[in-house]
Image (tube, rainbow, N blue to C red; front, side):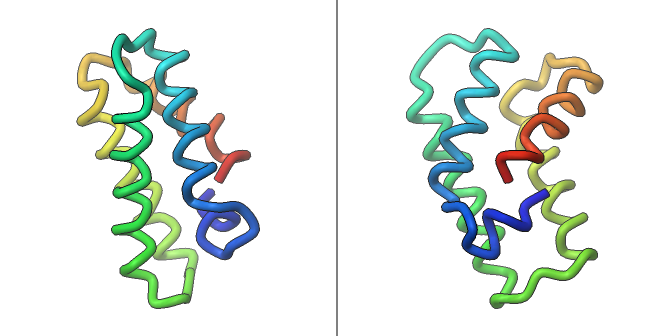
Length: 94
């Protein structure tokens, strides 16, 4: 899922912006999308700094789990199926 973003074929910033917009659309969130974008981008940077330039399948799974926990903290009242759908649709971005 994060392979393109973390190997450099897309930027972390553009991936974070697209996902922030998707979250706002899918969950009808009110407020500033820029603040959510910055939070997601910071999360991506934290994840990226732990990779040391290598991305294994195990780390990829940990990244997806980490992003899932982060999304639950953003939209705690969302149904699990909606969160899974959001992760699935963001796969093409990442």
